[in-house]
Image (cartoon, rainbow, N blue to C red; front, side, top):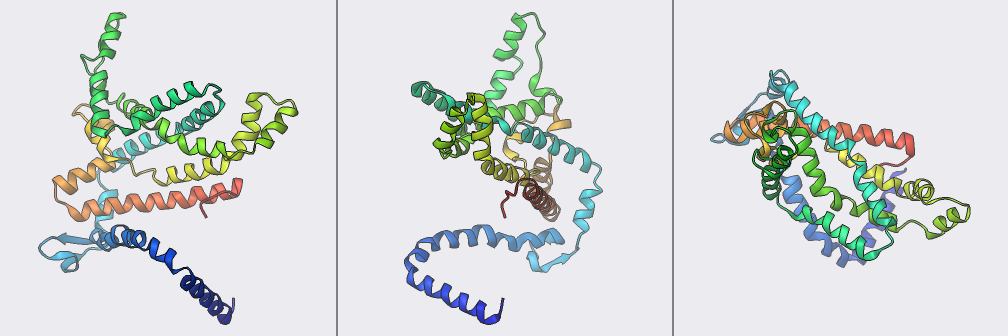
Length: 308
């Protein structure tokens, strides 16, 4: 494109901005908010490359380059931490289709009263705080909880669910499914509402059963939504939430519950190793961005659908 063409486009854009200046003023608070709270803190990323000392400030602290990154990847617990984090996040990704299935089931319900009741029941756990959710998990799966009482009444021995390292990933993932399943289905319910009724009627006229209508009409119609949300989920593969993992940890299940997020808390907050913890956080973000680009590229190649 020539310089004159670029200048012309710029002038036309300025003219449109002046014509609709009220809309830009309306969106200005959101732009300022994002700039201050999302882009402003990126100034502190350089802490990961310095031996940060609060008394010296960011610019006064010694520049050490990639020393903290090398320390992390050569740390003896690096692979166990990465394995535990990936085990849980990949487990969650495997269960990604569950909200889609629930949305399709809601879409196929004929009784509106029953549909509203089930939706209310599945949406309600989303509004529980993380502390209450973990408290419920501890209450139900505790040594003296109702689950163990039921097992004992059936002739089985009591199980220390919260202390078993091999059980922790299942408790963590499925408690998250219980809390987020209904809420996660909302976006797919909205996508299904936009499916063309003409396509559905044409499929039924051609003799398609309800299952075939779902497979050949509903799923292809909401596929862009499915792929985009999946890409976003993969983009946060290592960004495992801290609160619920930390609250569900016990000294006996650390073999599987000690993940990167809790390790950052241990060394960053408890150990005051600011630069080291910042380098780990930056490492997480870089890996997530790389995965986001890879999955988006693969989705583009396979289905011609992607974030960009």
